[in-house]
Length: 492
Image (cartoon, rainbow, N blue to C red; front, side, top):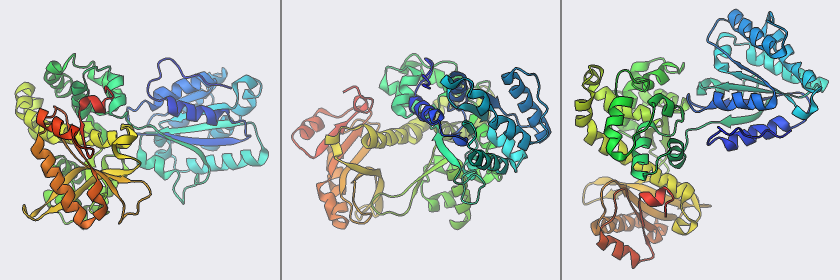
């Protein structure tokens, strides 16, 4: 059986192929796969088409009590079988019927194993905690009996709930045959998905909505050019009637783990303000460092916060808001909520524009530069890459640590003695020879602590260009590379 991707599938070809290979495996018995990711990543879109292509059964659960949830499943399953509504007395009976779909599939061998999709599975699980154990029993029984192959896909957006299903003490531990995580598109994929030609506009859009595909429909279009960007932000994101206006609050409200919302919102606000270490975040929210540890871990586990270690010092991790739209709302809308809600969005956005450029667009550029070096750069730029991140280098003259935006460590290097292959600075402004001098000084200071950094290549990444004198200086050296928007978006 070959499942051909549908024509309207975009950017999820790898996930489709992975699930299609798993489905096509003729091994007898009931096998289980998990498909999960944050909301609006296209999970349901993908699985509906997969079920259609395989002739499988698709059911999207609703947040209801167990009896009503069973009734809804019985109605959909009966319609799929063409027998009318089925009265299901228990989840055990439901799983028996679903596992029995394999026998029907045997009559159509060209289709391969039977496919069953239970979408929004966390709704079923949170109201019927016995469900994983019921599935476990059905899996074990099908193996003992070598029954007809059935492929059961459990899908959900609650990351903590889906992760719980495969925990060491969970009933389904060791019984999950495939896990597929749908993540947002990277900055290049997002540009292609939005259909943007201008890389400067693509970067600005990515800074607001990131790579979540569902936001394109919610925004009801994109700006025609960079000149239209401000108007688009005001009308499609910051207007109170926009579907994106309170999207950050919706995401938080739909995450069951985040109970103390005031604390979590305070932490997100602190991170959006540029507090990227645990001690700085704690100081910003007025708590002790250890007292926010659990909250930070919860935000990381639920996908709201990313944590990256200092790639040279292997300590003092950096925190960043993982979802760009959440960061945008924290830094922009929440700061002036009354004016945006009262319809004075244009004036409020004009006042926030500088904050957007420095606090959101700048860090977004730094992030995509690191991603470019890690994933897309030609091998000749930095060689074999193991890790790409940030570090701090002591600056005695300034009596402070200086942050280095891009640090590349070679593969196979130990955490203490790894070779630093490249150091880089990423900025939105035009770069000049003085930026090269400063980065050379940073390299020399880092080399005193990590001697192998003395040979590191210097990367100067500007979103607006480089002065001609810097271009000439870089052309005369082998250890300097200049990057711009065209490089990052694959235009040269």
